[in-house]
Length: 332
Ligand SMILES: [Zn+2]
Image (cartoon, rainbow, N blue to C red; front, side):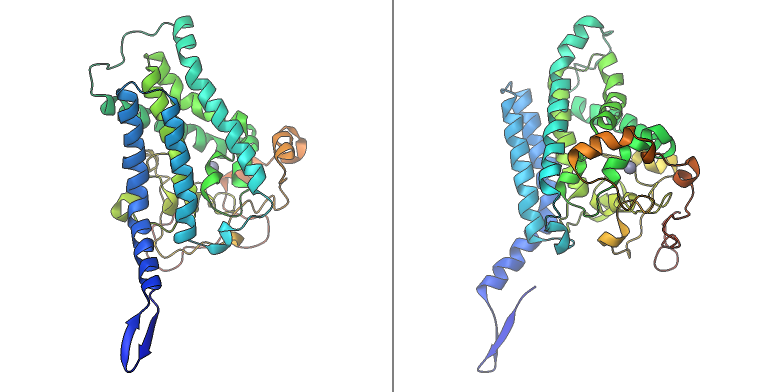
């Protein structure tokens, strides 16, 4: 916002506020292209050029650093930038889950040796086309398992860790139980491995998964009509509404293509989110420490009835929040 002052009848704008406004505009419209095209593109260029894989880690560091900076410049909710005694726990989630993803990529040559793949992989395609095809296929498997995790009790127990968040920021994407992440990633990547996914494509796919921290970013960015196709934060916030059944929408990690086809897409441009709407209404006292989140899904207390997973009734006595305004596309 520009700050103006009147001096001798002349309206002036402070250079500092002008610079801040310009920085906000750059962040609002430049952040997503920089991340999706710039950093994924850098990963593709490095890998296609035969660079060492640690360059992909350098790209990931740039992605995380950029996200935290942009969240400071254009926060959707300033309260979501403040630690709630959860930052350390979330860093552990990120470290564990990123390590698992890296180990999975490293294991691909081993898997290929054990299970020889038929020569179906389109090696003749341009490298970028191979990466985009891999992302679309992986997105389908991940989306389907994600949806199943909301419908099948035993899967929900492990996915619920991810839904316990009450602030929406960049690190949330990796805040998952490792078992849930393993099942989700296996569904996304196994079909690709079975047809000969090359390690180089898998490496860029792993980077692209990490860069999807955009999906939970607290940055109030704009992507125009692309929000109907790309699974970014404007749509994904609806997925984190706390009432059972209400959040069963927008399951995609990369795109909303599969949600449109499965009729699980929802969006309401007038909706304004805050922490009181996030988390799980049925489990307001969900464990918050890392170790307890690892153990809790194995306990009897973590169970939910199928009814509570599939209906829009709430456990805290409130009616499911309706979409604001008439003619909303929001689907309960
Ligand atoms: Zn979910």
